Length: 63
Image (tube, rainbow, N blue to C red; front, side, top):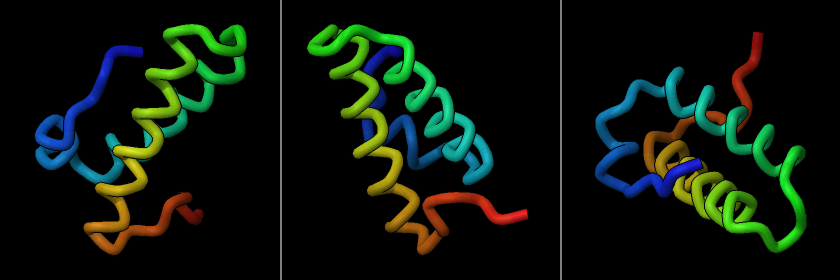
């Protein structure tokens, strides 16, 4: 997972952010501890959650 900046996330629709969040969790589940991919995924999750909070969105979409 490549690094996501705040400016990358600001312009994405909320649905895309939820998809990126899911993808980041998938990377974490399939990566080795202390791997660069895992660290990047954790950083992405933090940035995505921050952007969702800024928008006042729920962290997990509800059906």
